[in-house]
Structure formats: structure tokens, C-alpha cells
Length: 67
Image 1 (cartoon, rainbow, N blue to C red):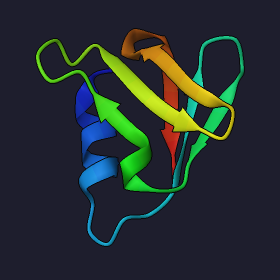
Image 2 (image 1 turned 120 degrees about the vertical axis):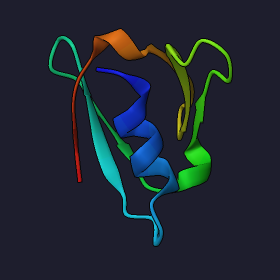
Image 3 (image 1 turned 135 degrees about the vertical axis):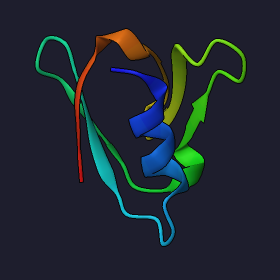
């Protein structure tokens, strides 16, 4: 996946929660736009702020994004 679908989901107005599915079958719910940060230069890495702390994800390992 590229950064474009993620950026579109985060910047959509009004914001709608979505789920990121990563390789291996794991999924992460994004409930608020301020929970996601894309690397400003490479756009290949994202940081997700989750209840347990922080998830750092290589965007190449994202298999799907669902609303």
C-alpha cells in the first residue's frame, strides 16, 4: 500500500474511524485523526498512538484499510 489511502482517510472531513490490516492478519482501529502520524519525508512509515503506547508500522506491510 502507499501512503495516499492512509492520508486520505486521516484528512477526510468529517473524520470517520477506520481499520488498518497489516500482514499476518493483525488489525488496528484508528478512532481519531490525531492517533496517526505519517513520516513527513519518506511517507513509508506511520506512527499510531494506541492504548498500549505506540505502534510503528512500515506502510509496505499494510494489506488493507477499511472504514
